[in-house]
Length: 443
Image (tube, rainbow, N blue to C red; front, side, top):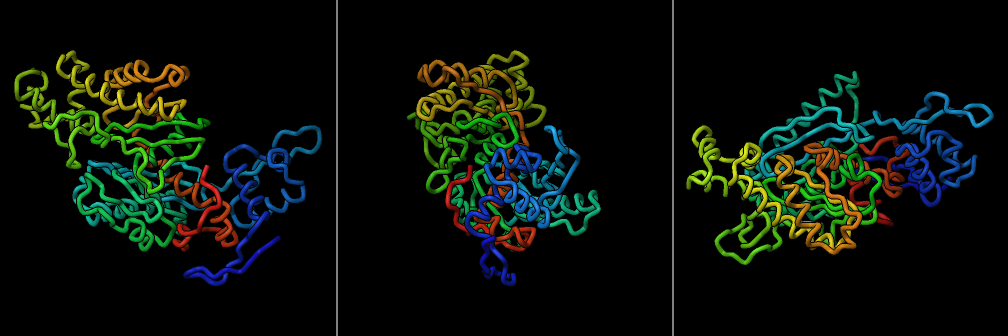
């Protein structure tokens, strides 16, 4: 067992495992965590590790509180082996997905199961102080609720994950010139949450967390190359290539909402540019065009909604379209074609096996999805669409929340970071773990 003594901020000298020892330890843990192996013999067969090494690593993980023994497994002729279980209840992850007009906050166990959650309307333009203060309040309430339900007042927070509706520099956890987030540019989101909860914090674009949620727990499980597209107030995409989330060199890959789809100067996007996809096909754009149709008398149904509520939303347009309103059908179809036109280029360029459509507008009916599909299949390269599936998200509103939790879980259990905290039994109290460099990208 190769170990070195390292000094970590806020801790006494801690034994850190290095080299082949930590690699084999992480391998054993990952096999049990993922369900790929449930017994010691299965671990040996799948990992190629010898029986003695497997026994040593399992014993250490049990001593650290990460694994526990369960029922007897199936016998292959001799004595039935004891099954192993990952202790998903050993700690919790605090997760939050912030949208343009809402927040979704939750407490998640170490296997990605949501234990408690809360959603409410919120305006991201209110600024980081007001929005994050509310996020922290809700997280604290949910954490107290979970501790009470599990009768464990000492249940520790192992990490915090948060998705934001704008570009994020992943290395620092700071928003970078987000078009719809006034006051957020450069705000130290990670530092603030790390101080409050004294635990590692990761921050990413919300669409990346949605893509990760689908990859780990949704309809993209087992896939290697996917494109997740969120159609909500704004539009964004998350890319998974070779089973790895692709963030780009600065973390802004997939920001398709502000890709140009028109040269018209009449429509100005919220980012200040003209011709952006979001300005023609996002939820705010649909609401704007629906309002015009109601005011100009081109839609009786939308005019009635406007008279009753004083406003028009994308959901109103969807309901009107489902009731046969011709103008609403045209608005949704037009938006779908704009989105499909850009996606056709991405499909030919990236060649994913699966395109997942999520977000509030995407869940409003089949018309928009049908227009997206028709345009993509018609305009993409035949080889790129031969086996391509375009489907609606199965996680729906939970994708970003679940993905934010898995972002933290994936980061914590890398061999490099696991080596820093496994002998302590928990990464709680070690916010500096976010700065540990990785040898290879996360899978």
